[in-house]
Amino acid sequence: MVSGFRMMFDHPATEAPAAVATDPAIRLTGLRRRFPGAPAPALDGVSLEVAAGEVFGIVGRSGAGKSTLIRCVNLLERPDAGRVEVLGRDLTAVDEAGLRAARRGIGMVFQHFNLLASRSVAGNIAFPLEVAGLPRAEREARVAELLPLVGLQAKRDAYPAQLSGGQKQRVGIARALASRPAILLCDEATSALDPETTAEILGLLRELRARLRLTVLLITHEMAVVKALCDRVAVLEAGRVIEQGRVFEVFTRPQAPTTRRFVAEVIGNAVPPGTLAALPPPGPGEVRRLLRVLFAGPHSTRAVISEASRRFGLDLNILAGRIDAIGAEPFGIMALAAYGAPAAVTAATGWMQGLGLTVEPLPEGEG
Ligand SMILES: Nc1ncnc2c1ncn2[C@@H]1O[C@H](COP(=O)(O)OP(=O)(O)O)[C@@H](O)[C@H]1O
Ligand SMILES: [Mg+2]
Image 1 (spheres, rainbow, N blue to C red):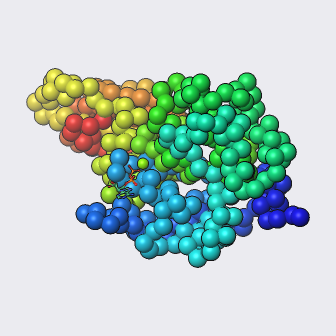
Image 2: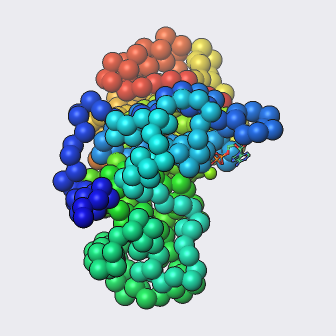
Image 3: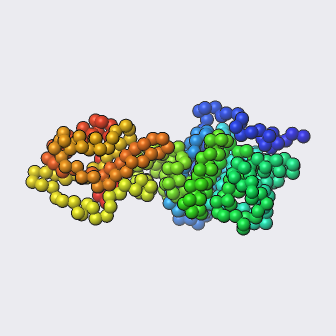
């Protein structure tokens, strides 16, 4: 007998039939969810598309609706309104059997691991396969493949209480991958871990994503996770997407105040407290302008600053700065105090913009 799930399990994820290039792996349209008695909706009309093979991050403060949103993708939470399409299939329209089959194609990793304390590592990883009715020999074969994938060969027979947080999450990840899903959902997968273990688990997810060609939708309240792992990001606030885009764009050109605050946590180019108050006043006939300068190309910071100073007769005081990269894309952000004749400051700003730099007034109290 070859049942539907057997065929699915036998089929390596790397050979899964590629979705049509224009088909997103996940398409959410107009999702709404209001919990009974709640003063405001948890989801207030969310639409998102996650392309096949990308890592898409959703970031937001506690209570923003992130968990509700990610739980809608596999219908652990049923939206009051809206469509949930996964790999081209409208999950809100399928029956229970169809939903069970679809869920086998969607793995999920949780913040608090959700392991069964009475089962060994191998027993936890095999659990979803057991629920799906896979015969013992095949379960064991699959567990034997998964253990090295997450680096837990030596812990096969250990129990959750004997594991570190990082090891527990490795079990959680292996269990999520047991049915060879094409899509992995991560709900704050590293939020219960210390920074070093977080880096380790993010590294593992990056590796698995490439090796298994997974589509990953992750939610987090930490922008550092987005920076380390994601291709695109959406910012969720009060159940609405307030901003989304490529991670590089959102980090270098955040628009909404909430996004700016999130980005500042990681980019950390804020002007040190007291610096602005300690700045000298402009001299006679001069102005003092605070500028935020973004380099997102091949410019060398020092050359542009010193040349602007020479060409336009300005004093340029660097208040804060950072050179960083998102993936392989470098960028630099600086906070400057420019002193000089008003026309010279304006001309220098235009000259730098002409070189492709982004120059904006520095918002007071921000970097
Ligand atoms: N099962 C539930 N019953 C009632 N209210 C809920 C439930 N789950 C979440 N909420 C509420 O919905 C809002 C969004 O919650 P959640 O999606 O968990 O946010 P996040 O994951 O971003 O912290 C919060 O106000 C929360 O209290
Ligand atoms: Mg949550």
